Image (cartoon, rainbow, N blue to C red; front, side):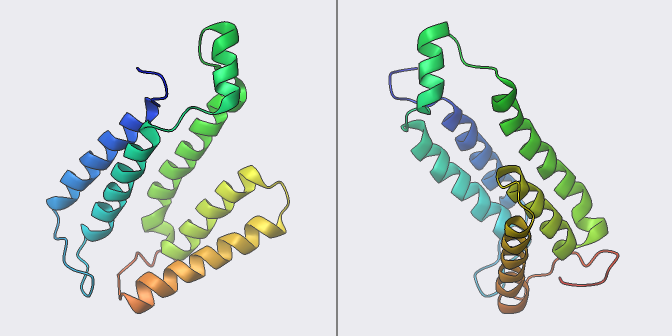
Length: 156
């Protein structure tokens, strides 16, 4: 890769294209009546755009310094955890979304992600609750999107 090109952006571009193409097989609908493929399509489009932008953003400085010293990327425990832990949480969220429902599963997912960065309890708790409440009001109340209610029969 050329100097100044971030190769990880190509992965996000490919995932965005894959998600957009996959969501086209579902009904997209429109902004007033979104279909089941609407949000996956917008998510894929966002991945595609952000991945395209990130291709030309340089790698973080500490990674560049490590590469200059060792000649290879740092496979430190911190770098590995910063990738695999959120990815594992995302898969757990996908698995729990249907049985638990949108509100509890999303709250737990966001709380876990926020807790990774902030070791306090109150800040991730508040942020998670606010994001879940705003997303519920936006998607379920305003856009009338259907979310899984789960075992608690709340939300959606």
